[in-house]
Image (cartoon, each protein chain N blue to C red):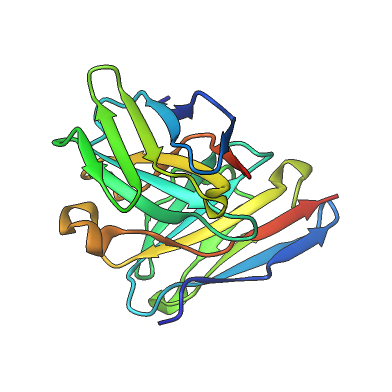
Length: 119
Length: 113
């Protein structure tokens, strides 16, 4: 079974440009999460999809970030316009169920991340 | 706001020794804790978890201890091997919180031969 995949692995853009990150979750996983690690700090939650619906977007830093999950499969995270402080590693994770379902269903599987550098 | 933090940013151990990585959390509502291992170029990988109704859980060469009184979590790795070199994150969440994880800063574990 394929794991969570992310594209691209690296992206270098100029300040003010637009970048779109893609995440393909594990097939059958309804839950999809975006996280990011900025400047070597802790990994922080951005948002959570359940199928195509945004369950929680409390971690989105501002309106320059737009996440979509059309059809409830893959997800995209667009940053427009990018700023210097957006540099970091963006992780996507997916899980089958929720915490109350037991570990086997709620474990979040992480992708390798996209390293974004804004110059 | 609530956060999970790590006491030591870097830990160096000799191969074969035991490693202990510590973590403090502040959200008293957290009832599920996870340790992740992140190797270079990869995403965080699940190591072991523990629920708040337990104070100890063992896996293969790893043990997680939870002290709810002082809001402290630790990961013990027995007989540390070179392949254990990585960044270790603790994370917490709570039932009804949608499963979103709050991570600590991370500890770099370096295993010296």
